Length: 160
Image (tube, rainbow, N blue to C red; front, side):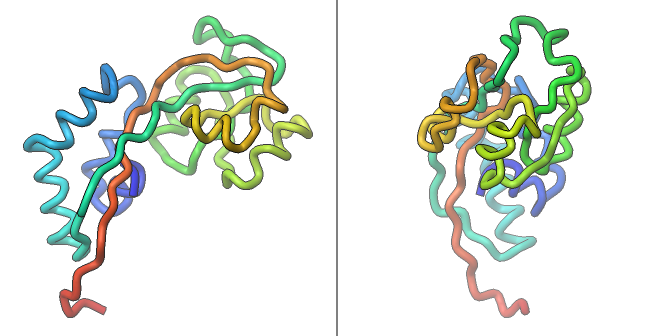
């Protein structure tokens, strides 16, 4: 479960998914392993009966585009950028002038190929392992969102 899923479970933690909140991945790890992370772990356990067992660094999200290099925020104006269905991410792309398009990841390659979207944003390993470089010309190392992936287990709390 990433920050966006934790934000769905405990809305107050959605702020941790804000673009450019983190300096680097080590900053993410320090905050999440400190008091804020411990509070989150306890809140998820108390509210949802999910015990967080471990956390794994997830690479930062970066932007790729098909036909236009993005060098300054103004270059995003009007670009249709695929993003996850996350209100924080959607609003951030709108604020930058892009037209965010929430879309299931399984549809991204074809949407890029057909021109339904102009670009997308994902961690490098997702871009590479899904061959998005075949349908994208530019990769902009924005590192705009950093997160951890949390692994948890539901505990038997007697809840339905």
